Amino acid sequence: MSILTIINLISNSIIVISIMLFILSVFGRSDHQIWKYKQRAYLAKIGLGISGCGALLNILTLSTPAPTEIVLNIGLSLNFCWLSLWQYTELKEAKKLAAEKKKRAPKPFKSKV
Image 1 (cartoon, rainbow, N blue to C red):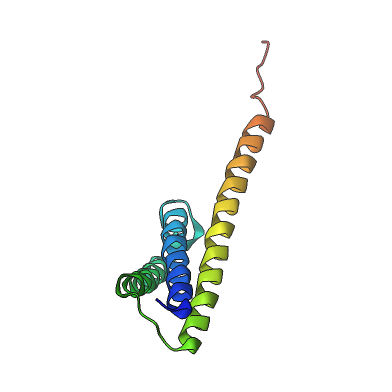
Image 2 (spheres, rainbow, N blue to C red):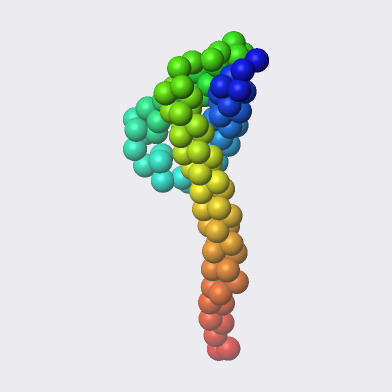
């Protein structure tokens, strides 16, 4: 197995894992902004699914594409890794803000009359 095959295997593995995490963090939440436009959401879901399947097939076949495609796969793996990490931190911050907002909510006024 050549070094290019190993690099391609690693980058495609990162792509598959990152896409799965990204899909779970975005499409797994019914309150996510992406559902504001359902057609765009489904288009994004289909595109991510096809990209993930292509990366998975590259892993299963242990292909050694041209060096330019390997560079592309490395770039895609970094982008998808960043996207999934960003969505995870956004979700974490949203939960934290919701908890703080709940604590600071004014208590209902009770009349003594």
